[in-house]
Image (cartoon, rainbow, N blue to C red):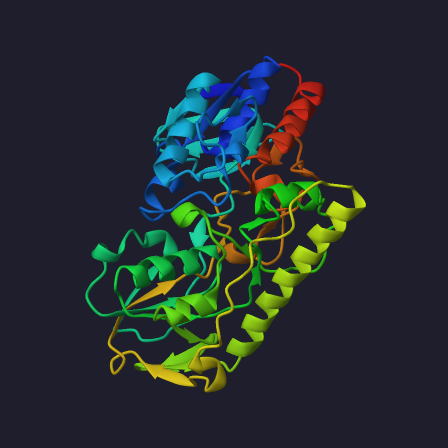
Length: 415
């Protein structure tokens, strides 16, 4: 039995879903936003307490709405971002239904219309925009040290919530580095497994890294212009924003390791790639500053010379004498935090809009700027949906506008 009919249903009440709602509102299109829990739920329950937004406040924006602040160059803490997204939902009067989870998306039998099943009933829609975000379920960890407490970075809250003992953090993306730094500064003994990464200056020649990204055109690179897969550049807004330097963490007491290969019982095998990963990070740092210098000269920018000289920190002993394995019991490691990223989870969607295998982890959406081959089905807020910035707070609005115009131009009123 159909409980509700709607022209467009947006699944997900985060930044992508709300940006979509804003543009549909502007075009006068009937729609509803389903959110399985609360607005900005992942910011609330899947981020650590001290998380600080990676970009400066002047770059915190959604369509027609910017963060109000007396210090635009500061970095917003997690709770300020939550309030910003809540304020946006109120400002655009988003037609939200919170606490309602979409459990199945399929075609109506004998029809091109779409059926969305929820615990509260069944909704029929002409269009469905899937805006559930890129951070859906954690990547499965390796089966190591089974008697030790394991958690994903999305489950970590603060140092006080962890049992006593040392902590092994696996992965040096932004989450892994920031968590390791916080634990170290809290006086905890930390082992950090260093993965492939790139580095960038927090500020260079008087401008924030995000300013340079925008000027250099990085955020507007399209998926067609995308080069080979590369790790994200390490950047942090914590403590007022500073350069991320793993050698400095080592000087402060963090034990650096190569990548984790696997393990048996309490022993964990470590790859001999620590030096290689550190050097790769340094090379990317220098390449970025040279590109910025060349761009400034080419465009005649009147910028001060670089005074953000990096403090030279010598390699830790683990680079010269790599650690080949650790024993979590002998080293007193009570907790392993996996900062190894996320994967998609679209097993609730029963439509031919995926490439890859049958397993949930290998199903990749197939689309052209969010528009799939199945009429009325769209994706929004995914990395590289169209541009580098497609999954970012300040970038998702462009794709939302594109999809809204497609709906308005090709979709008649529900009937």
